[in-house]
Each structure stands twice: as C-alpha cells, then as structure tokens.
Figure 1 (tube, rainbow, N blue to C red):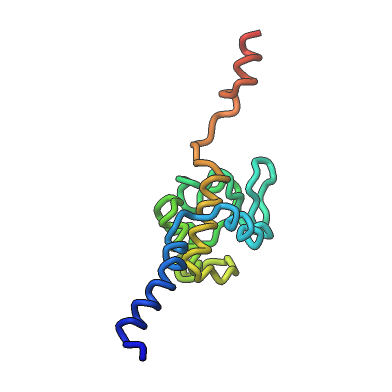
Figure 2: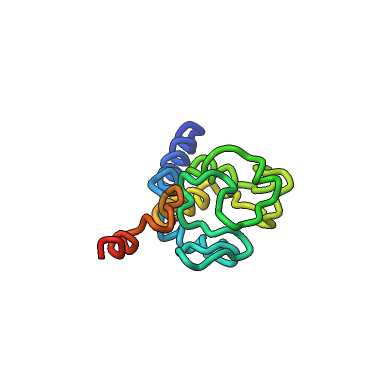
Length: 147
C-alpha cells in the first residue's frame, strides 16, 4: 500500500522538471514562431512602414503610442510610460484590459511562457528606441559636408 505522503512526494518529483523548465530562460526560437501571429499587423524591419499596427522597430524603451505617423487610438495615446518587458507583458496578456477602448482586435496571450518567449524575441530583434536624428546628422551628410 502506498502512503499518501509518498504519493505526494512522487508527484512533486515528477512535476518539478516541467515547472523548472517553464521558469527557465526564455526561448527566443519559440518567440520567433509566436511572432508570426503578430506579423500580420506589425513590421519589424526599418523601411517596411506601417501596417494595420505600428512598426515595432525600436520598440524597446520607446514611449507608448509614439511611433511617428501612426494613428493610435485615444486609449493608447492617453497612456504614459515606455515599452519594456513589464509593460509588454501586461499589454500582451490582454490588450483590451491594458488600454480600455484600444482598437487593437488581438485578444491577448494568456500563457505566461508564451508571453515571456515572445517578449524575449522582440527584445533581441527590434532594438532600442532612439530619439529621431535630424536628417542632416547622418554619416552620409557628414561625408557630403566634408567634400
């Protein structure tokens, strides 16, 4: 006869590896796959321009609702803060709860692991926000000025 404490211990030991794996490092490859659902509305590359949603290039550290030439909803335009892992996690969990009245139709990602993996992929891929550089303050402009 198996005693209850032994059974509980056995269950804990068999569940521990799965729990440890979920709390481990984010999986950027999984994040890349998860991003495919975002790619229908968002671009990642410089020069791709806006789609239905704003470009995510330079997202990290960018003020919320600050992508140039994108018509944000009042719900997002009225928010303060910058995009980082914490804010993205809150937003991606359920955009309609994060920004009541947002026009983004995406329901959200309920899985903590999936959000973590997607955010890790974005962190590696999109780069950090830099204030816009004036047109004449580029290496090409400097080279022409030196001629």
